Each structure stands twice: as structure tokens, then as C-alpha cells.
Amino acid sequence: MTHPPLVISDRGQATLELAVFLPFFLLLLLGAIELGNAWYAANKVAQAAHEGVEHVRRTRSLSAADVDAIVGSVAGPRATSLLTSRPSSAVPNGRLVTVDVALQSPLLTGPFLRLFSTFRSGEIKVERSATALLTP
Image 1 (cartoon, rainbow, N blue to C red):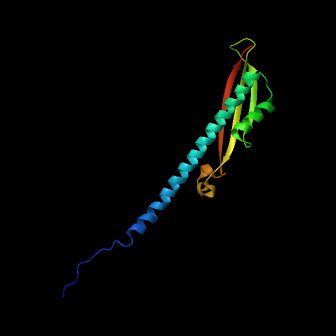
Image 2 (image 1 turned 180 degrees about the vertical axis):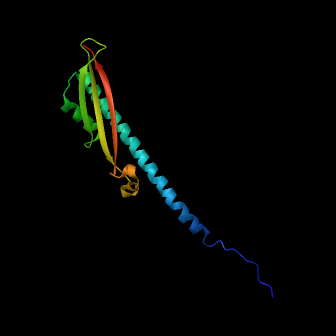
């Protein structure tokens, strides 16, 4: 009595491959989405700092309220700004003006990336600054 040859079936192979691959693919996809969000927020904050210091340079006004309004219009209402001014050592009667902008941007993917210690707060903090020299 001979037995038929052993045949290995491929019926569940695609399902198993999907089950193994899908978590890694989703993690990669969510990471790419958050990286794009962080990059966008960093560019927006850098532009807001530049616009704030450019406003001070053009108007020669050291009004923090004006800078806050410009930063808020460029980076959004969640952005905070700090205007500092100090005398310049390189130019007599010159002033160095710095605008620091910070933004707490929420994660787009919700709770998925909170599993990692870097994203426990559910937000990405982005900080940028711009400096201009005001000459008399």
C-alpha cells in the first residue's frame, strides 16, 4: 500500500503574509504622516519667526503685540512668540532683535504613535528663531 505524495497547500499563505507585514507597513505609514506634519510645522514656525523679525526691521517698532499678531497669522493661534532686543556690540547704537516662535502641534494620527515615549504627550513641539540687526 503506497501513500499519495505529500502536497503542501498555499491556501493560507497570502493571509499569513498580510498579517505579518501589515503592522510594520502601518507603523511606517503613520511615521511618514507624522514626519510630514512635523516638517510642515517646522517650516510654518520658521516662516512666522522670519515674518515677525522682518516686521520689526521694516517698522522699527519693538511692539510685542504686533509681533504676536503677525506670528499668529502665519503660524496659527497655538503659536507663541517672544521678542527680545539687546544692544549690538558690532554696530554703535545698533540693536539685535530676535523673535523666538514655539508651536505645540498635535499628532495627526491620534493615539497610535503615543505608544512610543517620544510622542507620549500627543504633540510635537517645534521651536525656531530669527534675528535681525537694526542699524540707526
